[in-house]
Length: 549
Ligand code: DGJ
Image (cartoon, rainbow, N blue to C red; front, top):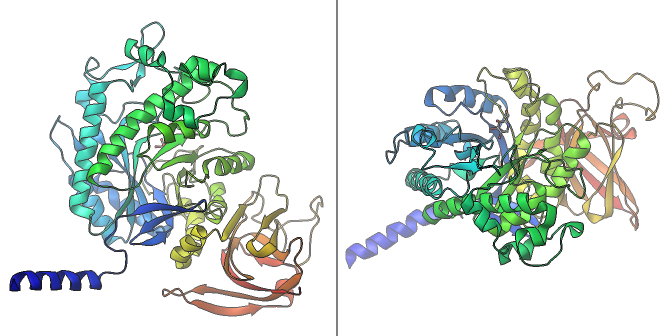
């Protein structure tokens, strides 16, 4: 009896010593269409870096931590490859994961693990040799003539069983080493799935499934493209017409991935997501597949199929390498939904992408991770930066450094729907952001800090503005009070329709490590007469507005 009382008392004492929420696992929450990743009970903003594909070995890690430190990240996204953890069937080796988690903690980084298994950029490259060498047991998709594709079939029962078993072993191991510390925040299941060159699997088992009625869960969510459909229920062809093959393939992939995710979560319930190589976001309505994107991948137009077939997957996430600001904006819009948090696990690490972090975090994204942000001597130029050194990390360091002092508050404000953001467009044109409370932020680029140059003028522009580089994120931190974080942008906060008022005070400063505002100076006179001019080095301003009616 005595023993039991002591045990209960010490348990209670241990619980009281923990910060609130510390016992709970990282999880996603949604309120009024706004999302948050709760870590130890509070919203967390992932200022991320995704390592190169081959950086997932203990001796390579120092190059990852050095870059993460330089870039002021708080989360590293790291592959864990099936070939690496199960080199021999049934023999698991998680020593890399152990080193990774231990070193992440030493380097004050959280982790997102990327499960490279049946599909990595659609191929089987990361499966173990015993999978690659046994096509009979682990079949490829077949084309219409019965010829095997390079891509493993989502109907390979043995493949699914083997992948799932390895994933469950990984999650079981993670639970053992991390359930008390929550270093690992989320898991990506597979990587950029889909198939190039073939719209779907035509193997007999796949064909038989294709001829079945569309499952009710898919019908309830995925609306047919009107012109293509001849029936509201029935076979894939009847319901989805010319889109039937690619939608069916998306369903087959999603079901496979969802099954793996579900089994993993049953042992250790971390948030899980899929990422995707984007199809054209500006093609509206999207045309049927014509060998122009990875069929069956989680593109924006089939998010509903993934939601229906893979409920254990929380997020369908875009990998942003699109050039062109219009297309990037369209993707941010399409992937940010009430049922789909915006999370960008990959964005190019070339300088021009850094400004999009303001747009994404301002829109309430859970986080952003530039891809290839480590000092491994490899550059994926022209997709990303030609540089592999500090110069590659610097543009991201600037932006992440600006958010770093305010990261937890920012995630909370975003969850409350109080944040907005923008990136300078390729057209360099002024933009307007509608702010909470009826105010608007007028944004203008390529201006000197003094005076105003008309959009079409030939006057000399500031050096360093040859390429678009402006970005700003604004949070409403109290009634009529805003925090502005940004660079290379002129901001004017003005009354929107139905409001009248003016800017009462603008302070430059930052937050200390206890989250208290530390004012450096008040901006007035020249510093406000020509708008609030955010410098190439990001700054933080706290602005109070006054209403006159
Ligand atoms: C997107 C993939 O998801 C990454 O793993 C990587 O291959 C990049 N493309 C290209 O560097």
